[in-house]
Length: 307
Image 1 (spheres, helix red, strand yellow):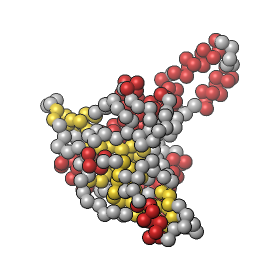
Image 2 (spheres, helix red, strand yellow):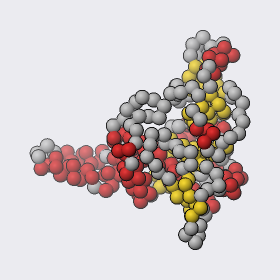
Image 3 (tube, one colour):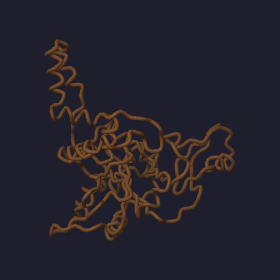
Image 4 (cartoon, helix red, strand yellow):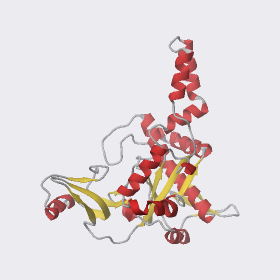
């Protein structure tokens, strides 16, 4: 994946999670790479990153610091990084629509609880004459990092959009730091450190070299599910170990009591865990592993035709 500006370590993680999520198997990995991953990957440049970073900063003070679905409180730096990542996913889909279909859309970034998800993340479509119109369907965009394999729609989110899009963005924990390095924020910090006698030139050089370097951010438009469709209950798959059961596939609603029912069906004496995540912070909503998402060109064509 070198031509995609993905490091060997990232490439290994991307493929590992494609296998884990059921997008492909080892025998068809090359087919998956050429037919699914590469055609559905876009890049976000420095300007695009700056815009999303600033958009997130604009509403930061008005946004809840709690993780959606949990009581964990984040400091402003973590909240800003998380919001920026969510906005990058929306921008990636905007780039995807423009490059594949020539459609120019406007994103809607609103204050509120941080969900990395809105019922209608595409707020308007711009025509060639400069006029705008509302999209004919509501598209919700869910963003995760390379290691995500579950599109999780808690509560009633599934019914709030006509289609739900899942995007993996190549941002690690250090994407804000790499951007700060790029625009010279750390230069100012290092200068202060030298002025107060707390840093030497050699220490500055070492610290600077250790900071991550900003590069265009790859984003994989992993796929989507149609909202409003009927899915069967307990649409799971997985494997039973000596004591526990690991769920690797799910495609539809998840309801209170489902995991206990699986324990009975599979004869599990221990616990039930979801591959790669363990437990979700809720037991009601909709859940899809990435291997159960729609992603082929004719399927995206259908979304485009409905917009």
